[in-house]
Image 1 (cartoon, rainbow, N blue to C red):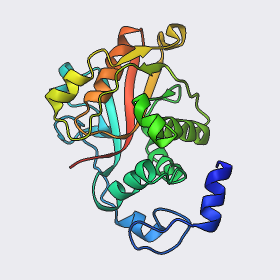
Image 2: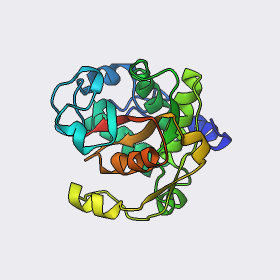
Image 3: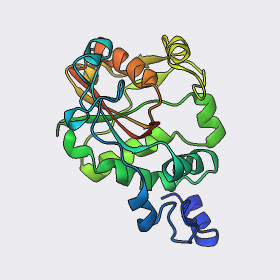
Length: 224
């Protein structure tokens, strides 16, 4: 935890977004248990699958093979992300990472965790990249490698955009970094929210084209 966040928590402790009690966490234990978890399903069509695998129908439309999602993007789960991203509750991302890490047994032990880069304008505005924080935290907790293998080229903001608009915005949005490390790697993309999946797919296509053997993803939440 940074010194700034330590001081903030000391003099202005976080309150639980669910019940408002001061627990030094954005989600207390009781409210965490009430969050609606996403069942194992295909991230594209929401058909039930085993271990969050992409269904056989959608597999021809995406380079991703498994996208695990911890919660539905609503109520307290949505409030946590918004608080962490827009109210500078940086340390709340550590809590998000803890929850996401519970799904790590689904992925290969040889996975390298890679954050999906946020538009640089957003990073400058917030002072940090939430996906980078999540990826580093999860990698550390699981003793797995972390690497920045993608760079963000576009500045288009995706909030409120539909799938077709997102896909258009994301054309050539990423470029690979460190082609040697990407080749034959099993990459696990990390992000906070998956809406249509267009951002994850765009990132995965670049990685696969650069030689990644397989690309999966782990996100905190997705709309129902």
